[in-house]
Image (tube, rainbow, N blue to C red; front, side):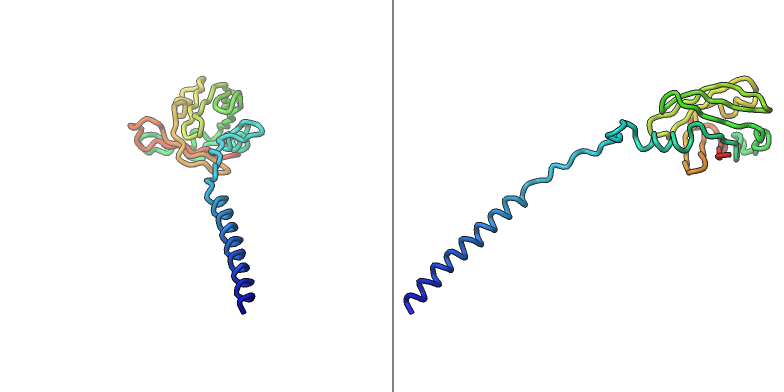
Length: 166
């Protein structure tokens, strides 16, 4: 009986030692803090943000028409711009040429945007009616088919511009 107690006693000590060692090893490895990398704002392969890719794919080089245009008093001007086509072309991801075709004549201007495309400025001259949209805009909605904008100026009243893909 004494031999049995010694046998099980030594097994018990060995068992406790193995369990304790395993527990220490597991605890030591699980207590290490994960060192997560900070978010990468740009695609690591081509250094282009997802916003830039989306704008390039959905807006740049595409033909748009004025779906809705309201002046500061809320008057609907959409029909006055029905023959105009707008194409933002790319120099960089945040600026480039703007081509407005009106009455069959192409007019050249420029566009510029901030990094997240929440602000867009259009500049084109050649006709008096271009003054309506040749201002800095705040983009209020971006969809797969268009942009909705209001002026950046706080005193613009009901002025609204909605561009839709042709």
